[in-house]
Length: 457
Ligand code: SAM
Ligand code: SF4
Image (spheres, rainbow, N blue to C red):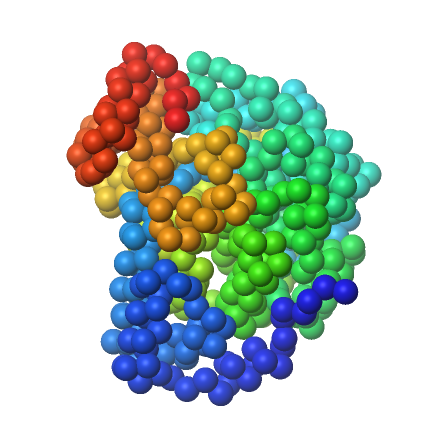
């Protein structure tokens, strides 16, 4: 019997009974946050209950400080790759739900390779493979073949170097097979930690709350040490869900010696044949608050925002905690490339800009786009990654490696405008590297990339 880490009564009591903190109390908690020590659910509840606007600004300041201390200005880009919208579940929020009569599509391996080619053309190096749950149409063998197909594509713009996977909860044996295929992160969202809400909204095998809650344990059992968690915000009170995420992260850390690699924070979007209105809508300002609180609470964990959000919200979120963002997405299997069907995807997108437009705008805002996959390929995952990431030491690797992948993007994909901006950022970041030997190595590798070599890390 697994340890219980979601305690509804305790969460509700924390939210109701934790007072809005005084300036001095808040200063203590934020000091701990700035020391990268994370927050307990009790401390997070205190931040959640801040009502004073000036104190709220202090929360944002602390989140900004932590984001910079641990991750600098880097922003990692990836693209989802939807391979099948067959699904036996009827999750009331999802365009792939079984009750939606829309046409179903499952990519052939040729189509997987063709869609992968489209992403590589854009400049992507990381994909997140996505599929509905249907062991008849999307058995694990199909997923494994698709991973092989993605990794097999090489064109003049490069290759995909890391395939992360977001598929339904499965067995430890299947997780082992995914791990053996060389996946990066296995992501699975709890959607809602509030059991009554979870059970009301899900129908089919996914409606088993405990199956979802302990799926990441099974992933660890299967040898995957790099997992991502998430909540679908809008289903239930965001404040409760934040406590759920923090408790789940702490549970994984205590149980497996490593916390989640990423936390995703999707907000409910309209979708084809979905009538569900967000039962607990999250306003833009609360959304940014919850990102800041999570940033302070789990400083060593990457945070992902997707194209579900508008360019404006994404940019604000980058400053206060987001470390990874999707770009140039389609939620329709086969939807990438010109003249492709754009309808009947999983949900509606908000940021529809190209990868090029997104990188230019990120650079103008002072961020450094990164396509880095070095940690994964150097086997810096699980506890090894956490030991580096927790004290903030990962910067030493990330800065130089990100520069190299940005240089590749500049050489292979960039427009003149983005090239100009990118080279400026590369030079500035290079200048800031203090360790003379690392700086020299990075300069040498940059020269090799300019001479046509690729994939140096
Ligand atoms: N089918 C698998 C599952 O449900 O675990 C894989 C994940 S699904 C392809 C990706 C995620 O999209 C879901 O976990 C859910 O959080 C999110 N999602 C589904 N419908 C959505 C909607 N209408 N708006 C925003 N996100 C949605
Ligand atoms: Fe299927 Fe996942 Fe959509 Fe639920 S969220 S209907 S499991 S694809």
